[in-house]
Amino acid sequence: MSMGILGRKIGMTQIFDEEGKAVPVTVVEAGPCPVLAVRTQEKNGYTAVVLAFGAKKAKRVPKPMKVVFEKAGIEPKRWIREFRIDDVTPFQPGMDVTATIFEAGESVDVTGVSKGKGTAGGMKRYGWGGGPASHGQSKWHRRPGSSGARSYPGRVFKGHGNPGRMGNERVTVKNLKVAAIDAENNLILIRGAIPGARNGLVMVRKKH
Image (cartoon, rainbow, N blue to C red; front, side):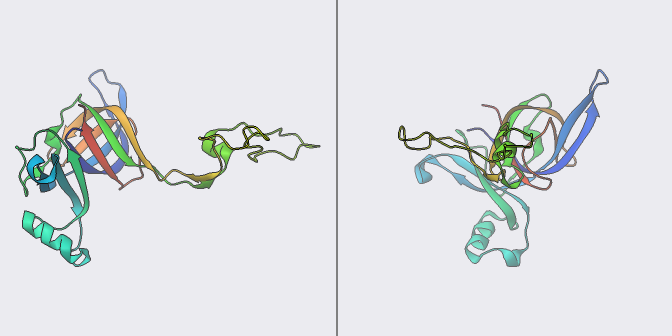
């Protein structure tokens, strides 16, 4: 794994590159993320950095977590995530990780929770063609139809799609380009779309 930062998806807009072409970008409010804890090989059996992000009222924080935040010397935060990295020596509890760890033109992986679309049928969820749209004898328009064979194999194959919950799952989009960095306002402009709804948490990671 590689180092990254926690952020909040603000929305999409466009900027213009050196050639005057419009470039669609997603604006992410990235950090500053204080380091809550550092995992070491000697103490934890692996190396990682724990980052916190997002304001949260102190009265809404459980007492055990209050002790963790006080020990690190930071204000209570809403989100806590761990980034496994090889070298944790540059990081200390209480220090801030900002958007300046990225550079324009750099490739990143972005992880978020996709938009929930509720319960959906197979045509919407998997792009099935559906049955005949004509009237008459056809009564099969959007239904799933048969999900398996008869006596052999006598079961439904793994991976067969069925109607069910669509979206609301962890998604990672890889190899996106950083279009620009606004360090003063803690903003990262990422070329293209990223998972999740507005104001949702995203994890932006450096490529290996």
